[in-house]
Amino acid sequence: MVVLVVVLAAVALVAFLVVGVATSRLGREREIAEKAALERAAAEERAADALRQAEERAADAEQRLTAAEERAAGFEEQVTATEERLVAAEERVVVTEERVTEAEQRVDELAAQVAAAVSGTGIDPDLLWVLEQARSERTWRHSVAPGPDSPSVFATASSPLREALLVELDAAREDIGAIVELDADLPPTVTAAGSVLVLRATQELLAGVVRRAEETTVRVYADGADLVVTLHPVDDEGRPVTVDVSAIPPSAHLELVDGGVRVRGAVVSDRGDRAGPEDTGETGS
Image (cartoon, rainbow, N blue to C red; front, top):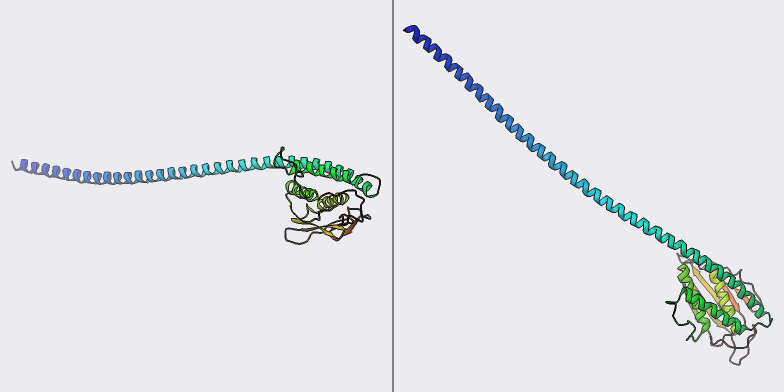
């Protein structure tokens, strides 16, 4: 009986020890499981944060890509517009060169006519002045007129010479973009021959400086029986630009002066006499 009790006690002790060990192991395993669960949750949270950051960076990259594509499209539009303007400018240059060629041919013809007129060959100065006004009318209609049906610039002009000079200046502004102003004090009794010479001399003087100057003032005024034409061009810094008068041949009726010319005998006096280019009528300029 005592042996049985001892055996039972030993079994009970062993069982108690086994249960204690199992309980201790279970506790450790539970701690490990909880720790693993915490680490898993932290890892999942870190993964979620990393995913969120990656998505944000991807969205930001997409926005930058979209902005870059929009800027690129804007640049392409600007390049296209610039190319179109360049083509249009080249076309205008071609047209302008053609018009310059035509004008130079016409100038040569008129120069010959004027030379013949002032040399006494019998060419009518009044006819030459009418032809010059017709040329100015064409220049005005092609380069200056607001519309093809606009009334003639000379229709109501009290001073045809002033209008013709303004046409030359307006055409220079339209064709070249130059700043050209007219300062003219014209008497009402300028001769036809004088008008032709003043206009032609102004054209030649302008042609020599208008592309080199930022701003040019054309001054025309009477000095006794003469008309004086001078140009006063300046560059973009306000410095004077030299006026080359060598292209104009001097004559008995055309004197070269500093910055321009003097047209002799271009104004009829109150008595009706004049000294200079032969003329038979007044222009009303």
